[in-house]
Image 1 (cartoon, rainbow, N blue to C red):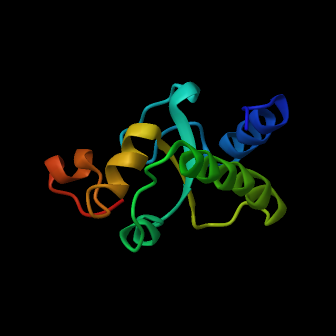
Image 2 (image 1 turned 90 degrees about the vertical axis):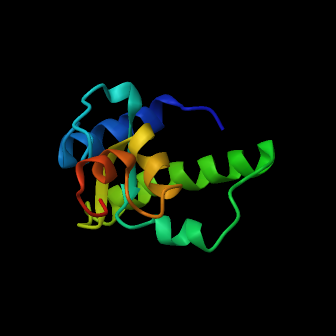
Length: 108
């Protein structure tokens, strides 16, 4: 799946609603921002990380579906904006972003 104009517009709409800033580290460069369900790392703790190209693209497809669902659901409260580093760091570090862990703060 390619990042189409429609998907870009959906992400911009979501960032306008939630704020175009990483909820963890404060990064504001929209090229690095994404959306995530809060505490979604719990789902990843129960699964093996994707290891093939096809599995990775399936995960991207699911992530893009999330944009449409967020807008359809009226911007639910369990959504946060994270930069890619914080999102991945949180998922692979037991639910705590390495930024927060270094600062002695709990999970994002």
